[in-house]
Length: 256
Length: 256
Image (tube, each protein chain N blue to C red):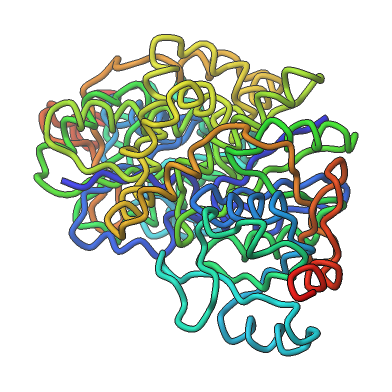
């Protein structure tokens, strides 16, 4: 099995992922948010490129079923009921709903994974489960880091490295140089995830934006077995988790 | 002082290096070869994009002054007297000569550094001296890794990390995420450079091409204080080294 890591979005351009299992990472905060949303029982997440596309896409969905969500450069988008904090994605808010999500870095990476044979979403909160998902595919594995406005983001490389480390420990793996480097970063920062708060530029910027609680939530390791998978460009909760309560039942329960 | 590392050629695209000191790295083998050539007394190295450009450029130089040199995908170029092995660049061969060099990865990075305010060439063999050169410029520092056919190359990141480590230890430095990651790789592999032989794909390919002696030569640390600098797209031996014997004197000596 080959194992590769695209450390930046540019590194993923031109990768022939046809036969591969892809794992998309944007620790701060899009993939952590997607994992939280799926664990909280949303039906699906539709990643879109920008706020305008989000509004257009939501308009095509049954009234009341969709929630607009996302951020630009760490700030919430006016009139969008959800931002990009995993803490916002509670069962009360998202169970049974479709979320139309646009973020600065993460949604582009989720969209770019569409060329892979199979694709899933990883964060620090589900890295071990995502590695197990990747192993179970029986394919070469590529981890795609979303990065920070096109640049390398340390926390994404660390998360990718934790996935690589677990995959390579469980099966014979032929690691690319980038996978070796990410694994090293994962093994260094894995036991000291909190050090990322100071080392990561994006974490520093989010902290200045008053998002310290989000960083705490994103820097938790392996708190869930939920592995969202990407199917035809749409993210859905992975198997092995009890299905969400269908939306009509939920609404009926709220307005008896 | 800001310190950044472009881990791949794509990461360097669009960097505004106007006020920066750039350090170009291609450990296997172009920048190691350039360091060796300058230490051996060549007059200058002209990096060019391809073998055709090398022949055209050499034709503009005084007869007998230029040596064509380079490789493509690790193999020597037919009819070029020099390849890309640092072991070939002996004083007997290169002293007083101009070398027109084209390589798969390294020469492009040297050419891309032309946009920086000042630029120099680093390898494992001169990493400490290159860091000291960068510090002496009093500017922000960007290390540009040549990579492996566009992809991340572990040995380049390690060399970049050794430069970052020394720079950041000597002066207050604001490190980008990529610089933090490279520093970590440098600190891990620095004391165990030989491990790179197995971890690096490019090293493995060169070994299969019968270039094990080159890898040995490229994986030596800090064997020279020579820091070649890039001026107007041409690489010249850095200051602090006795100037090479001028070509006419050398030829006169050979044919008394």
